[in-house]
Amino acid sequence: MPLTDHWLAPYLDRFPRSGWLLDLGCGPGEDSAVLRERGFQVVSTDSMPRQLAMARGRLGAAALLRVDHRHPLPFRDGVFSGAIASLSLHYMRWEVTLAAFAEMNRVLEAGAPFLFRVNATDDVNFGALEGIEVEPGLRANDESPYSDLKRFFDEPMVRAAASTFTIEVLQHVQIDRYEKPKQVWECLAHAR
Image (tube, rainbow, N blue to C red):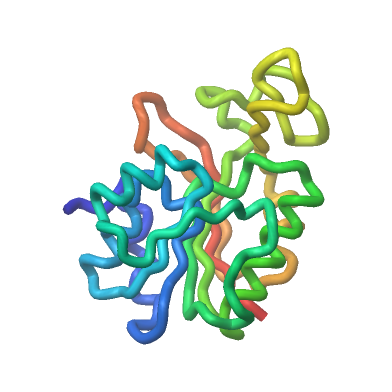
């Protein structure tokens, strides 16, 4: 299986081969499948039943859980030796976003890598200028500010969200995973 838009490739050697990795918001399980094929043990989570059904088809039922990361994670402190979150941490109000990042730090071992991607403020092909801005960087895609929320980050917002981590790599990149180019922030950070 090819790497999903190759984003994991430069970072695979940063993840320890022992212990468990967490894929938060695994969607259809593409990244989890890549990690598993390369010998990692992965717990794959998502809040959407449809996404979990697709992931189950790709990954089987082992270590696949429905988890709403807007709430405290159902894992003990320091249980994971690494984590990824690809395009799953930008659907929340700011205080919930900060809590979600703090939860990721809590469930990771000290020094464990956390690789994530979030929407960038210039992601105009995927809604950066659409809808109503309900708080800085957070947009609603219809007339109600309480549904279809999507956050778009600038660099200071990424740094603030990841303030409970030590950032090793932070870069603005264009990805070609979809029909149109997508602008994201990609970050490798380490739990404290």
